[in-house]
Image (cartoon, rainbow, N blue to C red; front, side, top):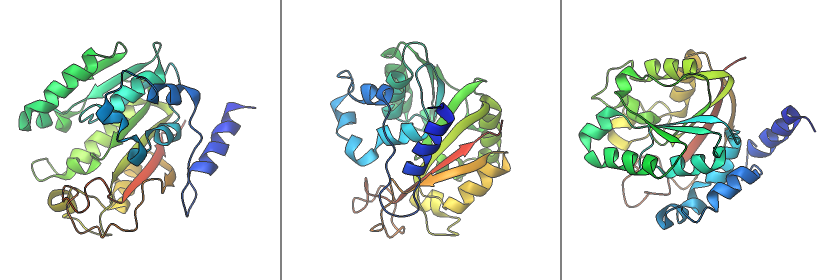
Length: 249
């Protein structure tokens, strides 16, 4: 069966309009998830975060070059490393602004990359993003909204999206996951660490990407969208959207 047809079937499985929708998890990603070297704290989060299905949606394959954009503690960096295998590369980007705000972000990047033979640290300011070129996929998880925090210039997201577009190969995937805000909630990034899905779609498409699909995999109808994502009443249980964009060939 042609690869293009297989991907089309997976897309139909993964991006249903209603109800739970799950993509088949390829062997390379399943193997990465089963790696005994993964921290126990990471594997304990898998059931809620669905990393296997998410990376299947991003079409992460052995040998790929992938960017974990705003890597945080390295949860997805570690899985990506196993999924792309020894012939692949994972670039783990940690913004200089994050490291200045909290030194632990820098330590997390160092220790994560040091433990992974195919991972490389990428540093520098988010406001002057410079990523490697010719990559297969870029993923950003729960951090897109940070580009709209008050300390950053208003054009931070637009410039970052343009650099990500430049970085990707034609046909490459940009996968965005974030905490959903109420429609039109322009102050949500600062107050709640959320963002309106319509705003993300508009900004990323303005950079030249095509929205290929969206998934309800991390959706939660119980989330009122009015509390900070760090509020104990909702932390770890927020309504999150998954948007799959593609750079046209």
